[in-house]
Amino acid sequence: MGWLGARGLVLGLVLLSGGWTPQTQGDPTVGLLGQEVTVCVRPRGATGARIDVPLVVTVQDALWRPASDSGLLALALAVRNTGDAPASALGQLRLVDGRGRLFDPASDVPLDVLTTVEAAFDAPGISFVVQPGLSQVRHLIFRLPPDAQGLQLRARTVCPSQDLPSTAPSERVAQPSATPAPVSTTEAPSPLVAGLIGQQVQVCSFALGGPLTGRAEVPITVTVVDGIWLPGERSGLLAVAVEARNDGASPTSILNTLRLQDNRGRQYDTYVGAPAALVLAVEQAFNARDDAAALQPGVPERRRLLFQLPLDVASVRLITQRACEGPPRSESEPSRLQVVQSRGTPTPVATLVEPRPLVAERSVFVAGCGVVGSPCDPQVEEARRVTHGGR
Image (tube, one colour):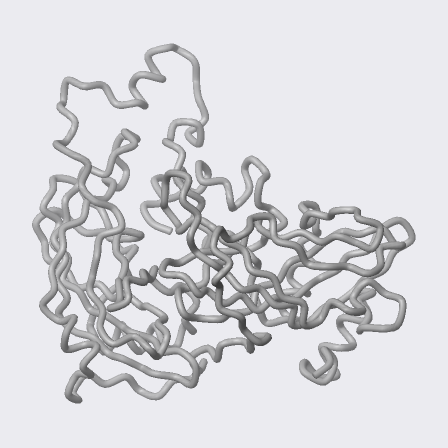
């Protein structure tokens, strides 16, 4: 289906007013639709040289905005995660034209263009992770010369194994309805939920507003107390209620500390794209707050977690994403903040934090990635988290 028919006349007029055109003979989008490549990337948070998460990427749609010196090519890509851990295709794709010229994604795309493309494709940027077993649409924008023709999608990293599954062009995954039915916990739990209730793990997180030591020092005991499984057409949403007890001496939270692992060893991050109405319904059903809410020392509190899972999951267990890193720092050991301050040179707070792996789902626009001070910059993300005590 063409872009105009899929998105309606009103959206078509908006795109045309901004200079975007549907596919026509002679523009760079001809021949792109249906192209498919497989890239292999590291799982989020992994270290070392192993690269083992295959992502099958298919060109699903394209828009072209020509200009005299250069044009913008926006692609809607169906990204299917056939591996065992959450991953994104950020930095893994490029285009090559008929003359052999290579093009990386654009890093200077105006905000209004990003907003228009995201609305047209109903898809976030390529930096957003895709959970194992799911296929989801992401957008990517390239700046090309007007004479670019015969474009081919290329992978920057090739999978070491050639025995990868071949897949037909993927369809976008249906998202939960924006107006969900009331969520009830009175029915008998599904087998998926029943096996999860009662599981307990200990994680360590950072003290909110404390010294930036670079270590997760506050222990938290997390116990699963309730759950709801909401299967959809192509994927399901698992809502989990946990009781989190702060066993340390400083306020903290369980944000980005927990994952699920299924019976096949695949791991899943918490889902951040659920509609606000569904999130509110879950929180009311569980009488629980979101995972970013502060936990005070010694006070058990309920928190809710959301996970998007493929329908072939038979069982899951709660695992830690941030394990405790040893005994807390002694009072006589200076924090990194104190060490920097003792030098007598004022230092911006964003330079005081330890580097952390890129939190891809926080990066709304791929065009900003790779720029110091952008939403993708992990140091800026950490400084903002510590300053505001949350997301």
